[in-house]
Image 1 (cartoon, rainbow, N blue to C red):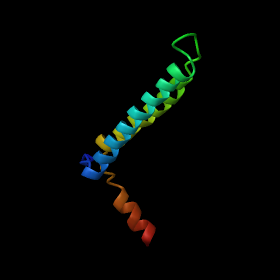
Image 2 (image 1 turned 30 degrees about the vertical axis):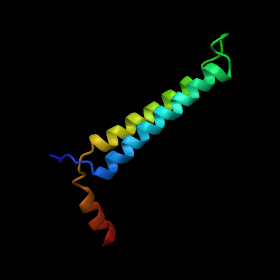
Image 3 (image 1 turned 135 degrees about the vertical axis):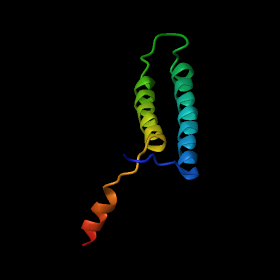
Length: 84
């Protein structure tokens, strides 16, 4: 049975930084869409949803890589065979 890898502090810090940048950038993006393109006065295509959705999926992937990783028991054998 593979063992769960405990994320390091550096991994957690990078993930939190990713979340903070995501929130700030998306707030700026949607503020530009709302105020800069006049969505508060008329209908404007919500193009920012594509950026938010794609980046959100990458954020979910980053979370999964940090918090749900398991040790690859076959990696040591692979490296041994590769180096021989």
